[in-house]
Length: 272
Image (cartoon, rainbow, N blue to C red; front, top):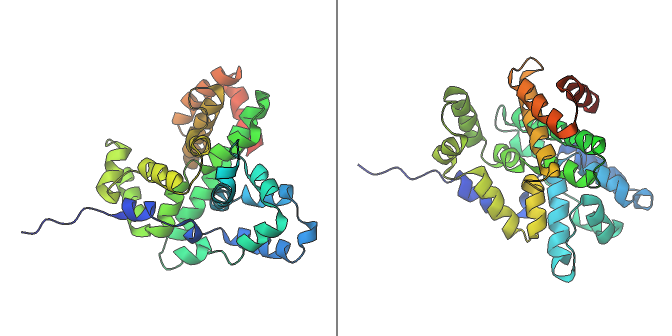
């Protein structure tokens, strides 16, 4: 009997070209409006659009890294910095006619909702990470916001490019929670999302510092702890404030922020 071929979703996902990465419909619509009045646009306003869309944010960072990376003594790590370097007119020349996420997922029931849920969770994590950074008076607020926003971009793109596999992985996570997530990913995708992200970011010519930022900034320092805790809290909040796992998250965050768990919960509520 012929041995079935191993899953290839991870390999195919890792080979995706930057120009094929879709953006949210709201991003495409907003950029089209700004393109009609470029004299009123500036780096801050365009960064605000990009930081509402993890995939647009990723595309901007990749485009600038590919265009300027070898000429820069210090890599550009934030979207605002990237847009200042790129300029308004070159931005609009490069970011018109972008593929749209909702159009990409329309043929697969449930994929659009699942992808948008990933975006919503990324926004929540980014807002929480920002609130923690502001409370700690951190100098790298935008970097931490961006790190939380981008952390799960591979899962978001999985729903766009391989929705059947994404749905199968979601079902397995619910049915077999005792198995490690990496094991489940390998069984469905033929690799892990972490491996896909590492290959992607390296192949897209993003500098090492930015690669680290996109996954988990400063992993052992207070900034990295803020991002990791923000991601955990946002994921556990998917099941509401009654989720028992939130108590441990708030306790850990309290140690970082020098706040009681109730104070952390208040900070999170205001951030969201």
